[in-house]
Length: 469
Ligand code: FAD
Image 1: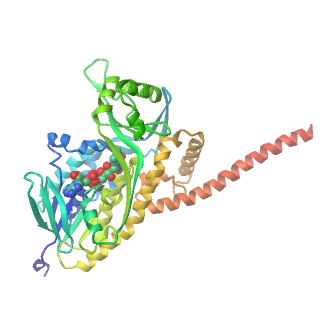
Image 2 (image 1 turned 180 degrees about the vertical axis):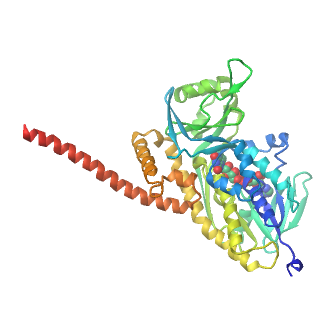
């Protein structure tokens, strides 16, 4: 009987957004889970401030893929997160000194949501803790793995000692510089590609506005938009926070950052490029944050495979780090967890060590399905990098977008804009790209035919009149 079969242990490395969600899914499947996280518990305020969590975007855009993964375990997570999320119905483009233009995301009033990274992480940890088959080890840094023996060696950051644990399955959710991935590279033929973009980023905060009465605060700009200041070779974006502030991110080549050496350089640069922004943030705040806040680099990682036999798999940024311009990194990582769970369901993988061959097949299937999708979204994120900082202001882009939105409104199933497929559906990223390319071909042919038709009829009418005269 199954009660005689030993239970499986899964070790999840990395208690970031993806690792904690994966912990929840495995705990619900009845597995015994050990979650190892390098940092201290982020729920203790002094820890989160020093832990580096705030070095990575304070808030994030959450969309349908992420929400779908949060809703599956039926633990009210989606509800908890949405209650403190701020809906964003479109982009608000800031042009010149004070011109604003709203570009809705969807034709049917769809929203993406601004959520605070730390709140999301705390909610995940609180839910994880309610399972008694989960143990969390903070301040444990993975150093080495022997995947065949299922042996893991950690440095306990509290006392500097090395400690060992065993696991039947190892899940690497340890982010962009994943140790699990690096350890696996030594024993399997892994293809690996990494690309840094020239832009780095710095976060700035627009504080809430104090009302005229002076006892309350309000948002200083429209809070239901993602604000963008596109300036071609660089850009600034702002997402609203629950406390009525905005977290802004300046993306710019590092040479531009390097050229701003003094406070005067900074103010001149902002007056020239983002004149309305200085008023929103205030000179003092801008000077303080620009020089004090860390600058982060941005890279894209593609690799294959993601698994090793029935022993290990890595997910989230560890498997497919992407530049943040589609707002999909976390959403995609959450979808990894949901996909892995559905494949486990398909192969009927239990928490007992009785079906190792099936587990091997399941992990292999995960690589085969997910890898083309990860490549697709990494490429799309690069593509959106140009769209956001440059194309959004081009008149041709705006006409095209209007026509696309209108076509989608008329034929909601037949014509679906790319952004809608990525942010408001759970369809495979690779299918979305295929479909987009097909639609674009049809769209371009129709576009050329219609504009040629109009040109011919204008031309014809002009000559017709002249002939009659
Ligand atoms: P991480 O969040 O990096 O977590 C990895 C965890 O592993 C960390 O807690 C780390 O301490 C731990 N760890 C690392 N090494 C070890 C080790 N050896 N041993 C033990 N633990 C270890 N995504 C979106 O969906 N929407 C957005 O709007 C968005 N905006 C972004 C803006 C910026 C500027 C950036 C940089 C990213 C953005 N992303 C966004 C991407 C998103 O932040 C990531 O995709 C997401 O955080 C990935 O989660 P993860 O759990 O895979 O990795």
